[in-house]
Amino acid sequence: MNSKTRNFLRKRAHFLKPAVMVGKEGADSRIEKALDEALNKHELVKVRFQNFKEECRPIAEELSDKVKAQLVTVTGHVAIIFRQNEKQEERLIHIPKDFI
Picture 1 (cartoon, helix red, strand yellow):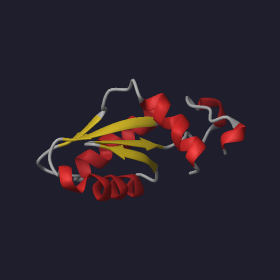
Picture 2: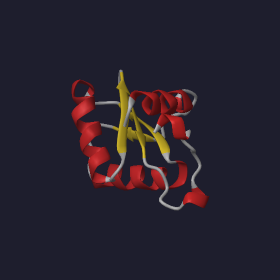
Picture 3: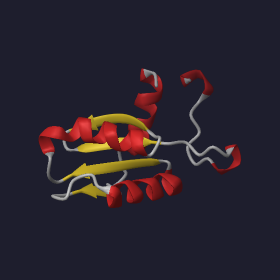
Picture 4: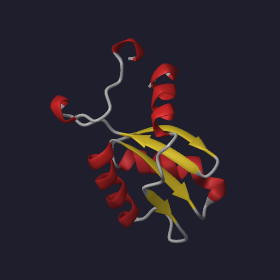
């Protein structure tokens, strides 16, 4: 993902509320399932870390790999994760061609 695309997605996610929360149990299978469902529905999701605050980036990278998504950014205790719908007609977020 290049910087223009990352910047575009970060702007789109600015007003989103976190859809998935990682608490004291960590990133277990329930979190993966919740993230997968949120990505299927919204394509762009914020994940908030309530615990494991020192390990946000590695956990977010691991989660995004497991659900076959891309980690856009980690800012503070919030990660932004993106997975575009494979079906062109069902996509919610359309990345401009000059950003790709």
